[in-house]
Image (cartoon, rainbow, N blue to C red; front, side, top):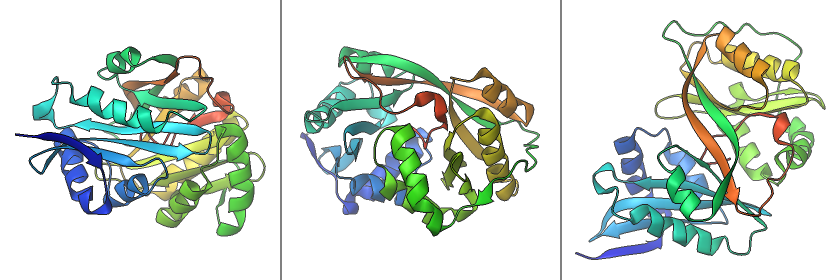
Length: 276
């Protein structure tokens, strides 16, 4: 039996989706398409034609984001993750900043590869009784005309250009895209298990709450999650007050010596670990 790593193409998305379903991950074909078509690229590990692992590199100009580190549950603890990570890091060798979001299970591997922790995030999921986030504040539904200003703000706060990703999110889930002029915005996207709200970028917690409340209300009771950096305890407490609970943590990590870009304190929700 032969193990081989090779570049992942659109024809390989079905294999990536199989691994997502086996591990309980949320990605849809549209997510994998954006990942495979990213300038950074994606790779798979296969044995005799069977996909047993994946890795990807989302490239936002100066920021290279390691993503979709995924190994078939039956194939774990055999060094496959390290092999895939090495492929992604080789592709990121010219990037001024390389980062990722680690689960507690993956954190030791990333530390061995030279990553250090920067700050913590937590996945917030609804209680069984659902959410009670009534619309508040002056958020307005986003339109295509808002995108230039939104993308300019995102470049400053996120610290890199992800305008193509944001435009695709508006197209995929317009009901989740809200804006407060010059103060903040949010997006969302559908998934296999839940609808992800994020990114949420805001100048302060009041704006973040208004954006999140509008996004939740617009989804009409669908299951949602928010992956929230833990910079602002009041933001986490508000999420709990409207019906979210903490499910599991992440750790945002960067290669040793790399400084996180942007203004993390104004990032109230990420797009998801696969997109940063």
